[in-house]
Structure formats: C-alpha cells, structure tokens
Image: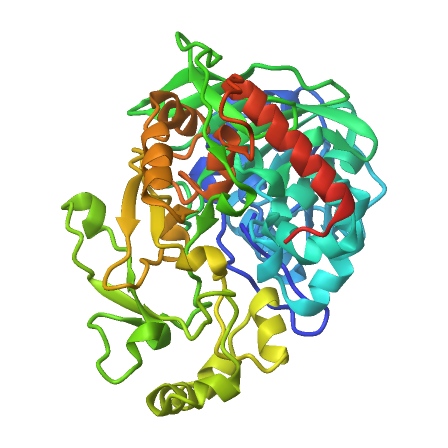
Length: 527
C-alpha cells in the first residue's frame, strides 16, 4: 500500500505516495504467520492495497513452496483501494507474473474511511496511508473531520482543525478498519508510523484502544532502527500486530532492530494507559524513585523557538544586517553553541515585535523605521502566501509580517535552552542577553524556559541536569528523532507554581500534568 494515497473528490491529489517493497510485504507475512493462516482457511484483506504488494507477496510464497493458487485461495483474498488504476496495475501484474486472473469481485474501489464495505475478515494486512491531517487537500479535510470525532481520536471538530491536526491519517484508517472489517478476535498486521505510540497528546485518542466500540490490543511491535524499508521516508516506523476484542495489557512485547537480529524490550505507558510509551530493556527498572522538583511559574512553561512558517530567508540572516534597526534583530541559537561551546552568534533573526507585549508591531509603528518598512514591503507577496492555519489567521487580519512562537517569553533576558530535535543527550545551558538583545530559539530545533533573573535561570538549569530526565527522554523513544526533547515531553518532569518545599515524585508530576491537560481539554480548544 502507498504510505499516502489520499485525494479530494475534485483533483485526486496525492500526498507522498510511496509503495511497500514486496520483500518487506513478505517479511511481515512471514513474521506473523499470515501465509499459513491463509492456506489453512483464513480470509485475508488488504484495506489500503495500493498496487497489491502484499497479495503479490502471498503469491510469491505460494510458488516458492509449491502450493497451487487455486480458486479457493483467491476467494479468501480481497484488496480494497481508493484508486482504481492501482488495482488494475495489480491485476495486470498478477496475470503477467503468476498467470493468475484475479477475480474482479475481490477488488473493491473504496475509500475505507468514508465508504467502508460491509464485509468482515479474519486477518487484515497492509500499510495505511501516512500523512498528517494538515497535509491533506482542504476538501478532504472537511469530509474527514466527523470521522475523527466518531472514532474518538479528538473530542470535537475544532480540535481536529487546530492542535490535533498533528494526528496522522493512519490512526483514523486503523481505527476504522480494525473496528469494522475484522471478525470477532480478528488480527491486523500493519506497517505504521511510530508516532502512534511514541507521540504525545496528538495520538492519545488512538491509544484508548477502542475501535467501533470494540476493544483492541497491541500485541507486538517491531521498530526499524537501521533498515530503510521505505526509501525517502523520514518518519520513524514500525510493524505491529493488533488483536481485536481483547483489552490492552502492558507491558507490550517490543522489538528493536540490532544488526541482523531483533532485541526484545518491553513497552509501558508513561503513567495512564493512553500515554505515550516508554521502551525499557529487559533488565531495566520501570520506575523513577528519586524526587525531581523544579518549581516554575505558569509563564515559564517550556516553549519551542520562533517559526517563520517557511520564510527563513526573509527573517533569518547569516550576518547581522546593518540596514535594519538593531532593536528588532536578535541572536539566533545554532548547533555550534552545544557542539563547540561557541557562544558567538552565527545567525540573526528579525522580529518586528514589541518586547513588552510580545505582539507584532502595528504597520504604523513599522513605518517609523524606513529601512524596516521598505524591507518588509519587498517581501510582502511571499509573506502573504504562507500556508498553515495559525499563520493564515494572522495574515487574514492584515498582520502579514508576523511569525509563530513569539510572546513576552521570547524577550526574557535569560533562557534555559536545550537542543530538542534529533539528539540523544539532554544538555540545557543558559543564554543571557547579548548587547541587550535576548537570544532566540530556532523553531523546533531548540526549546527553552524563559527566566527574568539569573539566579532563577541557574536554579532551573541545575535542576534539569538530573540524570533521570535524560533517562526518561530515552525511554520515551526520542533518541535521534524530531521529538527528542520537545516542550511537551519536558513538561512531564516540571511543576508549575508549586511551593519549593513540596517534593513529589516524578510520577506525581506526570500525573499532575496529565490531569491538568485533561481539565484544559474539556474547557478550551487545543492551541
């Protein structure tokens, strides 16, 4: 199946279409004993079949084992795919390579989310599409919103539109097909994005382990850490076996690739069952017993850096621009700070903002600076064409020179800052103002805690060096990944506004954070 074969009714746009190599379809089939089940009478369906890699892999295995692919076997194999041309390509391949005239009534052209067939099978196999909700064509987004709500992935349509747009479409496809296409106690075996288990709140709705009012459990996970199953895919992925009509139990058997072998680990949720998973080695303790208390005020919650929404070349400079007002040009953190312990600015960022309020300057205020207004006007057309729900909101209000991730916290004189993306070591440091201008974090590459006093920054930075924090981040499966130490993860070990004499355990903090998030979700839209 293509990792993304999504379309709108009008234009049938494709979003990152990549097909499963047949040898890896065969690997999944062998790993979970699917071929033997098929030969022994099980009905098989690939609900997002693409050009039929998994069915062709079954034919390969039959031929290699001297088993005749007769009408009975074919009658127990069904392919569903939204694009009819893909199924026609499969049918031609089956005829040319195996002399099989595949039954047309076993090829179903459907969008399994919107128009799922009223049939059930013993086993589902395949590779559902991988794409964030934000990547989908606009008309298709609107059609899918009620399905996200119906499957419990988000509480309401607005949350689909906003923060939970980070939900992967694979989560929705899986909930639909597991709950509606599988018979009692059926099995589903799929390649899926690892974020379904390692992601934070965006996939909490998937981890209720309920599909169509039926329970399902994750039985086994195989995480690919070395092999590139899908060329050109930057997303981390795994292979999973699901079991319907069984309550989720922990720990889950979790295998990581190591050379030519698979090393068994165990997966448990951070605290409550819907939390992201911690991955533990067989001999590793499943708990943190030492107290970690880092009291913070609410306005000090961890933040990502400035996001220009695709306009880095307009806002970010290699050399400090001499023709723009100094008060709106800030040093930008780069990897050299951690790699070489070099605190010299390597990049600069333009932020036409009021430092006191953290709000964009009005155009009237910008016009008081001739060079600034002329520079921005040259870039106006490009800045107005930026995409994304949040930045479009500002642009539509006429504030086309704004960026994301800027507020009063951005202009705090001290930042406890760390590399948040693609790392495996947690190394917080303090950056203080340079010539009166506070350092800025760079998009998702870094995260920070704002501080207004040096002593407070030193206290927080020292507390963040607790070894349990790095250990927890590693267990949350972020090593080398984009979500290594993003703010959502770091908040799991911080308290907001707690008295300094309180010394709860790490899990008290985790539980408190979760309870606060649940309360917030019930009263406010996701931001």
